[in-house]
Every structure is written in C-alpha cells, then in structure tokens.
View 1 (tube, rainbow, N blue to C red):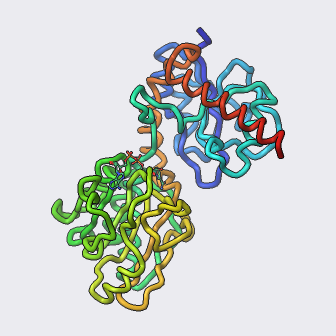
View 2: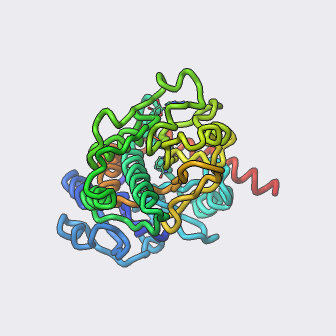
View 3: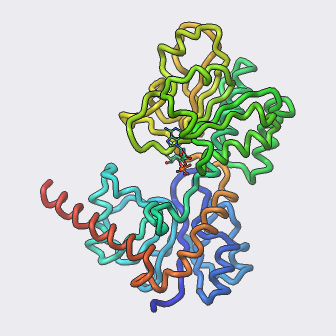
Length: 368
Ligand SMILES: NC(=O)c1ccc[n+]([C@@H]2O[C@H](COP(=O)([O-])OP(=O)(O)OC[C@H]3O[C@@H](n4cnc5c(N)ncnc54)[C@H](O)[C@@H]3O)[C@@H](O)[C@H]2O)c1
C-alpha cells in the first residue's frame, strides 16, 4: 500500500476560489491517518489557518514541483501552461481527454516526466455515474444569475459584473433584494429538474420565495413529445439543465420566439448545460458563452420583451465554499482508497483511461 498523504496545490486560474480539499475533508483524512500538505493560497475561499487548525502542514504557494515524487498532488483545474515534464501523480480536472485544444501536449508532459494523471471528471462508481461533480451548485448559481438578470431587465438595465459570494445565504439575500425583497410572483421552468444541476436550480427558486406552483419541473417524461415547447414562452425564466447525450429537437427556436411576438413572457434563458457549440444544442437561439464580466447576451428579436441568455460555463465558482464542500465530501470515500490505487476499481479504471489517452497522444504527436 502506498503512503497516506496528499499535497493540496493552489489554483492559478483567474476567479477560481474553489478547492479540491476543504478544512473539513482534510480533517477527516487526517483522522484516517493521512498527512495533508496545503499550499498557502490567498485566492482560495478557505483561509490557510482553517487548514492549519485541523492539523494540515502549510507549505509555500506553488511549491508542488519540488514536492517529493511519492506525494500525490491534488488540485482542481488545469496546471499553468508549460512544456515541463510532469513526474508526479496528479489528481485534477485536466480537460485533455476529449480532444480539447492542446490535449496531446498536456498528456505528453506526463509521459515525458513519468507522472500519472487521475482525471476527476472520469472517476466513476460501479454504475458509471461520476463519484463527484459540481452540478448542484451550478444549477443553484445559474438560477440565481437568471433571477438577477430578470431583475435588471425589469429596471431597463443589463446585468453587470458577477463576483463570487461568501456563501449561499449571501447569494440568496442578494437575489431577493434585487427582486424587491422576494421572488414571489416570478414563474420559472427547469428542464433536467431531476438531475444534479436541475435540483440546484429548483432549490434556489424555492429559497428566493417562488411559489411551488410557479416552479415547473420537467425531465425526460415532459420533453418526450419533442420540442419546440410553447410552455417555455409563458414563464419568466427558463433554466436548461439537461445532460445532452444525443440529437434532440430544439426546446426553443428563433421562429417560435418571433411568432410569439408581444405575447411572450419569457425574459431570461439560463443554459446551465452550455452545449453552446454542440451541433445538437437544443437552444439554437445564441452561440457564445457568457462570462462573469458580461453575464448575458441578448437574443435579437423584432418585437416583444428583451430576451437575455446566460451561458456561463463555470457557474459553481460563484459559490466556492459550498461547491467545494459538496464536491470534496463526495470525493472523500475515493480519496481514502487512493493508497490502494493499484487495486481499487475507481482508481484502476482512471489509470487505464490515462494510459489509453497517453498512447493516443503519443501517436498524435508522432503524426503531427
Ligand atoms: N455551466 C456550468 O458551470 C456547469 C457546471 C456543472 C455541470 N454543467 C453541465 O450541466 C449538465 C447537467 O449536469 P448534471 O450533473 O446535472 O447531470 P445529471 O445527469 O445529474 O442530470 C441531467 C438530467 O437531465 C435529464 N435529461 C437528459 N436529457 C433530457 C431531455 N432531453 N429532456 C429532459 N430531461 C433530460 C436527465 O434525465 C437528468 O435528470 C451537463 O451538461 C454538465 O456538463 C454545467
């Protein structure tokens, strides 16, 4: 069995305040006999001292390249761009298994260094479902941004810069205030309501005060008849939270919106699923991802209310504390098995995938 140890590295992506380990999951690992090194990090939502108090060893920011090679490095997002070989074992989201830009160069860094990548996106349970994902808070935050966009629109304004909230209660209060004290009277429809993101969106709408009857919850059964759906035109906010796996008819399209003219109530579409550039995108009414700086994009229509789309692809970053807690707790049982990674299924599957992807990357680079 490998030793019980992890090194939590800092995140370097702009706006990223989430963390793969939290003080509470680190504490549970320590109780289980692990040693946890934590890089000091001003950007992380948790203070360094919160980790220190539960017994973690605080180390210098970005010092993981000089960590002993037998200590696994855990983080969330991509490593800073470089061509340096990677000799360590890394647990993180690397976004290099689906042919993303630069995928083979990233994998070649591991291959050249003799390191290993265990990609968090591909850790699955025996039924194939991801062991940890950020969905709930993506839906929660997406619904909040949708409600904020509606509030701005009602005042004839466009929603401005978004910044991460200290916690969920602060987000809920800010949305309620923007809506004049409560969301009561607003009508919303969530598609994919039985999934992780969908449940989060429904939860936010409840917490800001929408009546239960004004939160329409659709999943496979309700969309089986095939879109476009006229029902979407009759709500203020529509939140799309589906996991798109095949071609489906669009939920909404431009002709339908134009035909509704001034009869349309729909004012904000939040595309949490963000299949923006997917050829089967069920929302062919927009084609860009929006950002914290510019959270909405307008749909160009000849009449009726303005219609804004929110299509931010890193929504959980708006709730870094709760999103980290949930993700890290879901990951914890697998982390406890990491010292047995040579035999533990969740990790042997992830290692096999890594080996396959490295072989593809080597072939790709040899052919280029
Ligand atoms: N924007 C972001 O920041 C962000 C963050 C996390 C996840 N996501 C994305 O959100 C999507 C959903 O993730 P999840 O974790 O909630 O998935 P999930 O599998 O937990 O839930 C998806 C739900 O969609 C339903 N569904 C699928 N196809 C449908 C259809 N045609 N009609 C109605 N319902 C349908 C499923 O039955 C399921 O209930 C994924 O594409 C994911 O990549 C986005």
